[in-house]
Image 1: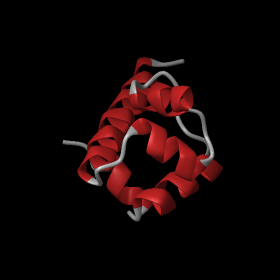
Image 2 (image 1 turned 120 degrees about the vertical axis):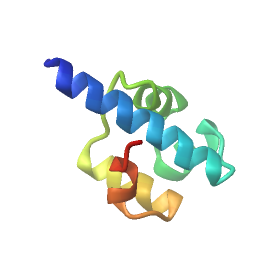
Image 3 (image 1 turned 90 degrees about the vertical axis):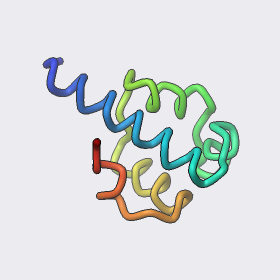
Length: 74
């Protein structure tokens, strides 16, 4: 694993957390909507794991956002 991929996962996770919070959803609520465990959502948000494309699609549907918005890092 390269430092760049770790950085990307951390940036993605931080952005996911921001968007989820702005939608007023808890990790538990998002996990339920997406069909993942709370631990999985937590791991994605902390940059430990990145989502699969299938789960990314489910996350964007649950949050009602385009996928590209989750990659708009500050």
